[in-house]
Every structure is written in structure tokens, then in C-alpha cells.
Length: 59
Image (cartoon, rainbow, N blue to C red; front, side, top):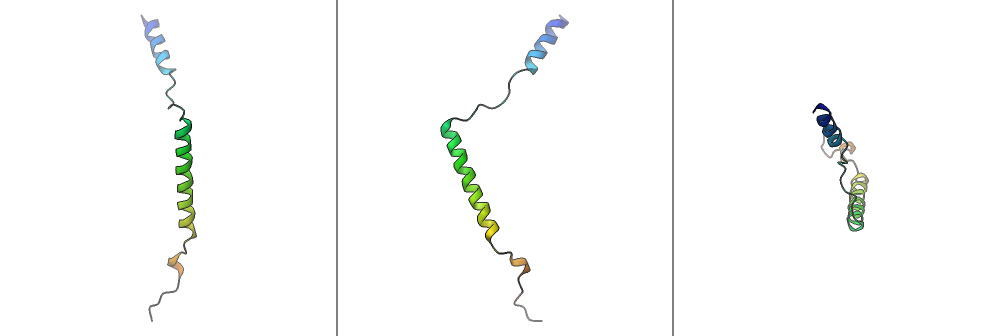
């Protein structure tokens, strides 16, 4: 009986639980989304940092 339980536990532990490989269409959509996110990140990095600019307040 113990051998059967051990075998069942071993078989359950050996299952492939990885998600399925994306289809060609899904892969293209993921690549497009990644490109859009990269473009957005590049645009944000290109903006000037206003925290170091001189202020217009008089002293």
C-alpha cells in the first residue's frame, strides 16, 4: 500500500505544469505589445527632468 502511495505522489510531482506555448498569432500580439511598451518607456526617458531646473520664484 505504501508503495502505491509513493508512486502516485511521484507521478503527481512529475507532471509538466508549464503553460502552453503561444500560437503564432499570440506571439505576434505579444511582440507588438512589447514594442509599444518599449516605445512608451523610451518616450518617458526622453522628457526633461524638471526637478533640477531653476525656479521662477524670486528670493
